[in-house]
Image 1 (tube, rainbow, N blue to C red):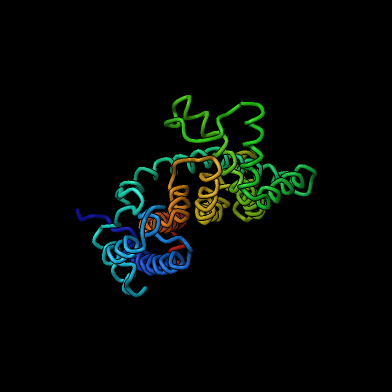
Image 2: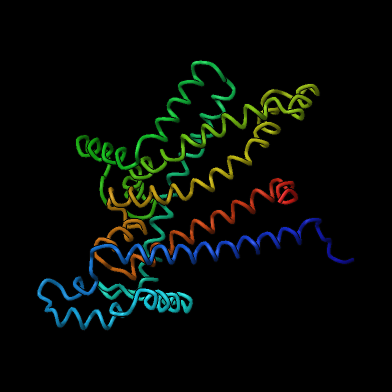
Length: 324
């Protein structure tokens, strides 16, 4: 018997390839914009390498060695060549491999984002479901007000308040990473930054869950389920919430970019040794190769997450692929 071919499988592969092709164009644009932005910052990597005692002749020699005396487009072309060959260069500050440093910093960043999502996603879903079931009531209004506050308050302000609170009460460490998240020290160190970062997600998820679940509760298939005698819990979980999950998954994918931006701020405030802190430190120090590598890493991660979200959406609801 031949292999069973699922209808629409070929179309899904074509859409995936198209999505990857578009993502490559997006990444090329990110490379160009990131490169040009780093050209206008005042820090000079040749001066940073030469140090305070460096002479003009030494600085000029370093500039020629790094190719910084070449026209901007030549520098960009040479940089693209190195990236495509897998060579992201070395730090001009400590000569460390950019790839090695990014791999080392990626773990803490992923750990921080995962910890933020572990508490923020269920909390947002729970608040949204509760508000949808009590729509128009006091609880609904309170949840929506809290959601708006969560979206409006900057993450750095929340982080600074938490640091002040922890410094006075000595309840949690306020700087650095204490180890893996499953260790006691690691858990102590990640609570504050993960709480501050997760607030970015709670509001949007709660609002989207409330809206989509409220609409789904009045859909035809939900009324049919009720008419057949299904319990209210089964109607909500198996019928209404399943329909409402698709836009929530899409929103969650889009919020990953916001979460990465928040991670850059959070890591800087709490001295968390992730890619965001590495990027900020590199830009301030004029470490061009490291800063460019961090920008590419963050952009690539965002593009990859969006591709995965599209795939999950299409697997959950094949009608999305048919409409595409």
